[in-house]
View 1 (cartoon, one colour):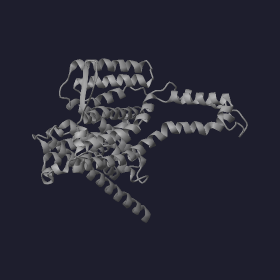
View 2 (spheres, rainbow, N blue to C red):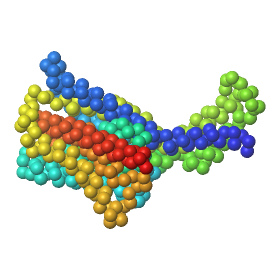
View 3 (cartoon, helix red, strand yellow):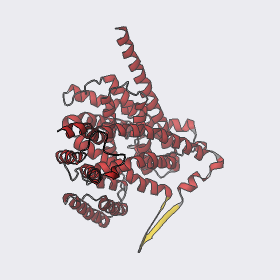
View 4 (cartoon, rainbow, N blue to C red):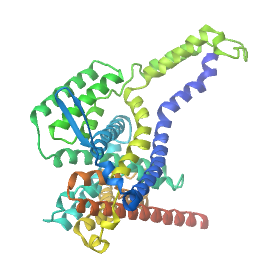
Length: 456
């Protein structure tokens, strides 16, 4: 018992690293990623607009291809980014959604309903505003552009406040952003598919069944899921569905249970720690001096690997690459708005621009707050403890930071360079207004509540 008591802090530390700290790291990475996204956006804008950098569009539209047997795939660099690298982004989003559905803020109807209802409102109202303004116009197909939230930029704006806002508010923002990411994926799959190749879709279905069987058989090797995932991506690419959908599909089949359950893990750790039986400060300067200690440490490493789920391991491995490489590359290739081709007076009066800006800046906060309020008043949901309606309205303005997902949907919506330019301009304006509005509102509310508390 003395050994167990002695190493109890080590066991507690392991669980802290496995359960508590991943959530905190998630928020920190999203906030840090937003700074890099902002930097690459500024670089893209500068690159696209200075005459010395006329190579911007030429580079991104350079064709790159490869041949396997009789099959040849050739796409522009920007398509490889949007169809290939972004599939990894959606795969990571899918892993986060699955984790939230199993053990997070979407794991029970009581937990999930409030942010999900908020997300529904945050998608419907902007979509309706856009559709009304763009009804029966060439830009009507972009109705889904203002419906998405860029979680990295939203969490980055939230990070400005540090610990001045309730932790539950950050969780709410992350939860409804993840929920509307799922909604965006469904919209892409259902409404932005132009033609279905049923033979490839059938192959995709067979591969998904194999993936499900692999999961059912408790196969935990990452390479198996990686190979099947690439095969499914190729099948989806040829089916007519957008290939990023493959990322979400594969993520749902990644195992969320390790080889060891928590009780077995604790038992194993206690046994391993029991091998360190030596007088205080007499175990030696190196673990190499004691073979039992070496075996115990190797066993502990194996136990940690066995209790860790493939979902957790993949999310931990991929998230930094997605946050700090894939999304910045996407922003660099897609955010290059060419200002000298843009007539600002004409752009500001164009239905597409108005629909996106008003959808993001007004539609998002109105939809999120209104649906949240109605769900609480009708007792369908309850307002999280320590959070008040001004908090909800302020953070709902961050929901209007569409950027990454809005740019992505814009690329799917239009082929006309003029409309793409208008939509990029509107996304930037709407996102900046939403970020500034949310920061100013929450700063004013935080200051007023502190002033009242001080006076009291």
